[in-house]
Structures are given as structure tokens and as C-alpha cells.
Image (cartoon, helix red, strand yellow):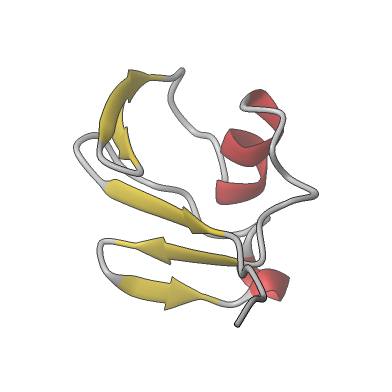
Length: 66
């Protein structure tokens, strides 16, 4: 399936959860929030929510500063 990850189109096998996609990209520990098609996905749902072909995922990392 094709997914847009932070604006970049990428190819993945079917039937992956949000957590699986994060693991495949080796970024699971740095992500603080996930949006699937502009809707926030709670962290306790990352293993049960499965993106579909053509979906958009945004992985957000909060950065402090000032």
C-alpha cells in the first residue's frame, strides 16, 4: 500500500498498524503524536489502527525552545 508519511509517499505491505509503520521507519521512540488523515490517533490506539492505501500519516515530535 502507498502511504504519505509527513508529505513523502512511501510503499508498505498491507495490513500494518500505525505502530508497525513507526517500527519499520525506526522512529517509534521519538514520535509523540500521530495524525491519520488529519485526525489525531491516541498512543494507546497505535497498535489497533491500520492505515489504508492512500492514507496520510503525520508523525509529530514536540520540540521545546524559546
